[in-house]
Length: 573
Image (tube, rainbow, N blue to C red; front, side):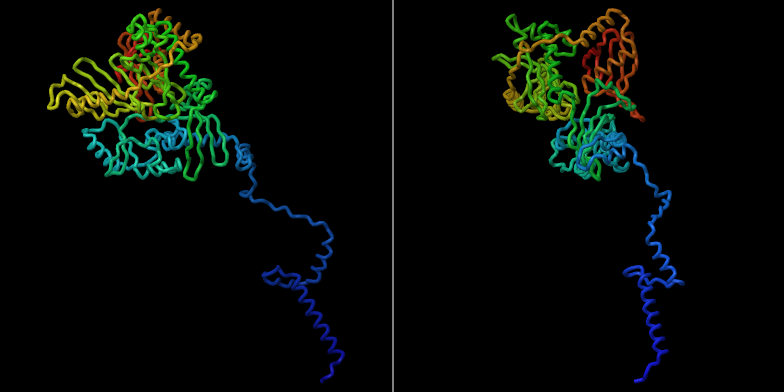
């Protein structure tokens, strides 16, 4: 073994120390696990020493400059309110949220859901919801084919109004998105004509049921919304002041596909049931007072009431007590939770008396379902339908069958029989069966006398003998100041001989139409005048056309006249 000298040992020791120091420096300057080795810098020892001296000094954190696009935004009060309530808790909707929802409800896709009331999604009236198409899009070429198919089925030569159509697949998709349910469970499906070859539902109409809404307030709990609203004019302005406005409550949820509807109901301050009863009580009070005071047929008609009260009082004999025999009755005809109000007279042992009138409540006001006459009688059947028995001579008679249907509580024809000797003898005689329920033999089918009698006997066997609550049980209140003021104003105008101004009579026409139909057109105008008689058009300006609701011919002095569309006498008072 070779002996190592002192000089050699010194060199070896120095080399080892340098190596160890170098490894320590490299280990201290590394960037951590997985990082690239740090590059050795000149004068490493001096930098390490300097860092060791600065450790004892307080460390100042550098303030980073924020780029303009990353500057922190200050939340608006509305944005703070949106996030103020913990998730799952109820909070009020902001003005921005209300505005957005209002804009959505005033589109054709959603407006149809607010024009009719429903207590659950199954009760939505799809005739109303899709009356204006429901936001679906059908090409011009497809529309032409639909119109041709529609005319082929109806047998008409031309269309007298536009055809609204909805594809069956679109209908099922809309129902699923807006209710979360399938179309087959809906209680009020479309009653439009189904065109099999085109696979669409089609409906011909020239008007609209569009009702602009004004949102008043609302709340949110998660994705559940509760909205209070009222109807506004087509110009966006309210047609009624805040104290008279009919308020509705709409409940729905938000989903990625839009809104899912839960209910849409009139929401009076006193509660729905109490509000309905209040409306009915006013009608009952009015009839009880009229019967007690012995109003004649003309005064009853002038006050938009059944003249049969006066007729019965004067034709049923001296022993007939109108207050004990006439009265009111409740029956829910369409099982919607609102019992309809009947006005009529109790029957004797020999025959069943006609129903005088039937009322219901829709959109926070009363609506009249039917009004009978001396030769235009209505009888309630045991299945909650009506038979309308009418005649205009010994040679012409009809018994027509109706049911109450739709959100507007219309009488919808089922079928009926007609005796019409004036049209001449047929192979089977002057007896007819009508499927459309209209008193017209043109589209009716001739039947035998036995078939005619069988239908009549079956119908009359189903008539309900109604037990009315007598008006004598009604505790009469004083006439309201509004009624007294109205009577005084009417007498003043009639006695002056000058009549109503254009503005006054147009407003009266709008008021009358709204009372009768639960809808107020936005405009009324004098179309023509002939002495004291004026013709009034009630309509909405739809931009490219006018949608007419009614034509009235009215005496400027009395406020009485004719609904020229239906040919019925009316009084604007």
